[in-house]
Image: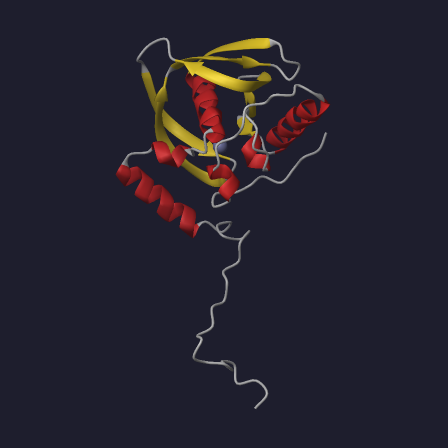
Length: 185
Ligand SMILES: [Zn+2]
């Protein structure tokens, strides 16, 4: 069990739909352990495999003292009720925006041993399950904001100190200046 680095907004893996889990093996259980340890170390409510750079449909959650995981989740909404409130993401650290979600959800999937699991959640648990399942489809919570909110969120992301740290800007030199820094003269 190991705490792993979390991929941040801008990493293409967060925009890539994850593949369904086929093998319910020891490797999957190690992934669940890594997700759980990393989520708890960061005091997160949930963590999805793509956030550790793994393109598999798995997430963990830790909501209202209920710790668990779900593999190959499929969501159902028993009613039309909505909730609106602050949401954040360990891949967009330090930023929270009010995000509309469904209030109630039924999530069906499997444990890491391949046993069928069903989570009936409302409020925070429902929000977490929707947020983490979005990750498995390459969707981030800022995508769920209305156009104005998204604009505000993108501005805050671009101004965040962690933004673009993983990919330092490439220094482009003009092709017309073969010796732009005047070196060797
Ligand atoms: Zn997230």
